[in-house]
Amino acid sequence: ANMPTYDFVIIGGGTSGLVVANRLSENKDITVAVIEAGDSVFSNPNVTNVNGYGRAFGTNIDWAYPTEPQIYAGGGRQIMRAGKAIGGTSTINGMAYTRAQDVQIDAWEQVGNDGWNWKSLFPYFTKSEEFQIPTRNQISRGADYYITYHGENGNLKVGWPSLITNRTLLPLLDETFNQLGVPFNRDVNGGRMVGLTSHPDTVDSTENIREDAARAYYWPYQNRSNLKILTNTFANKIIWSNDTRSEATAVGVEVKNSRGVQTIYASKEVILAAGAVKSPAILELSGVGNPDILRKYNITVKVNIPTVGENLQDQTNNGINYQGLEFWLGSPTFSVLPSANQLYGSNVSNVAAYVKSSMTEYAKVVANSSNGAVSEANLLEAFQVQHDLIFKSQVPYAEIVLLPILDSFSAEYWPLLPFARGNVHIKSADPSATPAINPNFFQFSQDLDAQVDVAKFIRKAFSTNPLNDLVGDEFAPGLDNLPNDAPASEWNDWVKSNYRTNYHPVGTASMLPREKGGVVSSTLKVYGTKNVRVVDASIIPFQVCGHLTATIYAVAEKVSDAIKNRYRI
Ligand code: FDA
Image (tube, rainbow, N blue to C red; front, side, top):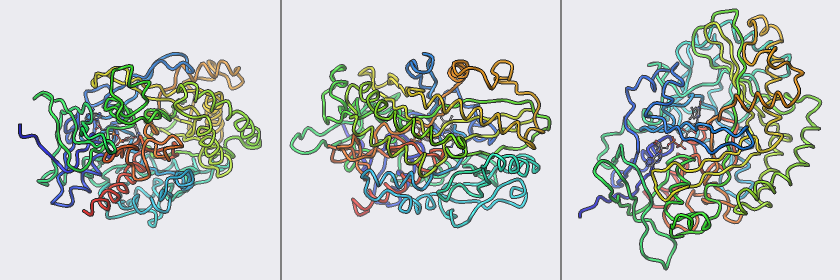
């Protein structure tokens, strides 16, 4: 039969995939196909409404992947949300636009990813961005920025929702958090993230609707004749050439849709952008991964990379809720990002020493739970980098999102850099089966301790004036149910029975040198393959302190340039 052939076939029309599709198809001579399991959500109000966070959850545009039972977290399963639509998870996320601390990106280069540092990524943050200058009204409600940190000519609209929470709030928060040693940070997007801040969102400030990857990178370009998106089409696996003399060479992607199973051919590359849960699973289904796992499902080993699907890092989210004594209108945009010093005060050196003395054990536990796929030495090196970032560089250690909404005032929070390392692996040769997702939440005592320590810090903030004047009773968990001096076991139980995933999975196809456990090189090419890349959240080797999309957009812009250079297009 006459099968369709494109230069590039991209699996996943989500946050990262649409950036790469857009950039490669800028050249009219280059043909690009995007395979997307979901459909258009262009006029879905659960997507477009800037105050609609959560409305898409559990609907048909949410993959809602169940995790494995979390053995360190009370044994229950979590639901890992992810968008199934043109635009991917950017169509259902919380829209916060925050990048990373500069030294976190520098750490990527420090461990051997040539050319990946804050300075080299910065032009791609700005390239992707169309910063919308806040109005006088928004500025009066806390919006603030340094224009030198921002791009004004990119695709992605970044700014503030039309109506930010009442203008009285910022001075009161500022006064409160100053007393806790956390100063105001006018703009977290210049590489320094610590402080109280009113961060921008991925919103179209004029239309007051969500700005997702599709609105930024696809819909305005949908008429390009060399760019084809196949919706409601599920990618099963990569198809390889029979030539076994050279590196594994992809010739296309097997897909399934209402017309049946067929192969979409790629003459240049197959690019995975199915997200941190699905991209490693697709690699395994295609024969790239840990031979011990692939053999269980009778999958022929094409490339032996035992770390595919390992190194999963996510965060854990809990909330504390107060009765509000004032009435709050508008969209909340305030976050507090304290460093370890600010959080722990004079106790910080004890915490740092405790973590340091535990890291050898952490590495042993993770190596064992990966059945040796991840080496202890590599883990220890990664933990050392993480320890330095937290305790020497003083990157933010937690994010606390302040949510004054109508007559309640809540705080949702997550420690930013847990030491837990999990994994994602197929548990069937059937591509439609959800893989086993095991983030190992609260694998280590410091991960759990931090979850409690931040809760206590929040209580301290809410009992400090003037913030204290704004709230009445704490109704969840409530001081009666969980007094401040409750024993650690009660605090831990509360955390474990109320937490949720923070939906920030990264690392499952980490960009690292191969001998350090990497799955992709510094051009995001899968080791041992000639023409397969991964470009999504999977490649981020260490968790970052920003929300993920800002970094994902920048990474996708950067790799697009690398691909264009490679083919001189
Ligand atoms: P993404 O998930 O965007 O794209 C993957 C695409 O592949 C999807 O479109 C999917 O349908 C498709 N796909 C998967 N398997 C396939 C297959 N087999 N065949 C065909 N297609 C397939 N970030 C942020 O910056 N600010 C925030 O406020 C938040 N808040 C937040 C809330 C919630 C609820 C979630 C779930 C996530 C966030 N995030 C966030 C995280 C952020 O949105 C997320 O990390 C990125 O959008 C992920 O981008 P990717 O390109 O990696 O995958």
